[in-house]
Amino acid sequence: MLLLRLFLVALFTAGIAALGAGTASAQPEETGPTEQVLGTLQTSRSGPIEGVQVTVTTADGDEVDEVETDEEGRWAVEVPGPGQYVVTIDADDLPDTVELAGEDNRTVTVDEGRRQAVIIGLEDGSRGSGGGTVRAVQLLVDGIRFGLLIAMAAVGLSLIFGTTGLTNFAHGELVTIGAIAAWYVNVQGGVSLIPATIIAMVVGAAVGAISELGLWRPLRRRGTGLVAALVISIGLSLLLRYLIQIVYGGRSSPYDFPTGRAVDYGLFTLTNRSLASIIISIVVLVLVAVMLQRTKIGKAMRAVSDNRDLAASSGIDVNRVILVVWMMGGALAALGGVLLGLSDQVQWDMGFRLLLLMFAGVTLGGLGTAYGALVGSLIVGVFVQMSTLVIPNDVKYVGGLLLLIVILVIRPQGILGSRARIG
Image (cartoon, rainbow, N blue to C red; front, side, top):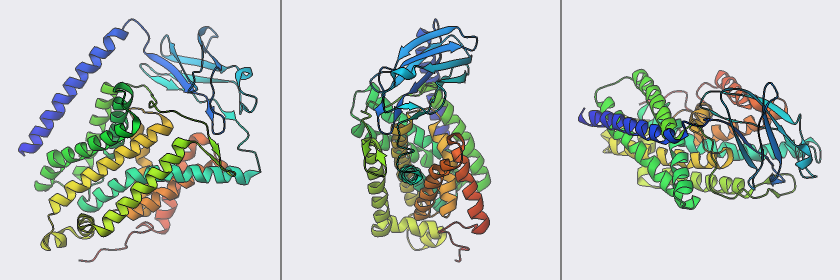
């Protein structure tokens, strides 16, 4: 009970401090607009496109500003206030190998205090070259990369459910915290991204440990039911998400890391950062699998996940195992957040937008099993990307959720889940 009070006091203090920091940082900007439209022009083959003129006008045709994309292909324009704006690019500034996939303008709605990202379709010839098979292979590779990223964050979510029975809706915020911690160390602190990622993983592990010691363990001791704990996790998710928004803001920011051009591997192309993301994900997930199979703490995790009471009666320190699970889950979620930020930039709600896909992967593979989370996340990632062959890119996440519904109708326990637990 004392730990719970200390945790709530700490959260309240952090919230007041963050609110003060957010207010202080906002004061210098009171005289100027806080709304923006921004975007990045790049394709898989050409990489970032520099020097393209971007014009932003109001819905009535009045020009707001005119800028050019930088060496990373990025551009941003401050707008006078909320409302509808038309973003137009000069197609003549595009390289000879790149052309517009649709119209050269896009109408967007900017909400108060928001920085609205704008996507204008570009075509570099990679989609149509060699027939539909090449595009399918490209989407398959992108799906594997995305699935591995989901699995990175979902393994911890699955282990937490397996050892405690908690459906943790605040797990997405661990992803966001890791991405933003790395951003502050990398961009604001001037530290290269690799050390910043390691620091972010330590921060994620620390947040996971504080959550377990200060909130979830005292609630378990008091006999709080799983439904009540689920509701508490939703409240914690909302609290953390908006504290993050106060501290970080609503902007979308990249890491200080070179984008680089995509490398042509024949049937598909990959940027160096995408290739690094795949390699890092595979290495880390293999290390997690080895840890679960070969180490003493890994075997204890599997024992507690299978039957907590039997594990406790055999001499396993269940609370210690659960603490390690929370720390490992936080570190993996933070790493997943950094990898997601590399591809999609860092945003205050990025973990929340990934949360449903994490749940889809965990449920599809089998609740409570780390290997099930890996298999389910890979299937969800590949299906989401491949579904764009037949559905618009804007609604591709719906395909993953539809796949989850179909699989659960056929096999409710998931791919690697057990029909019943005995003992």
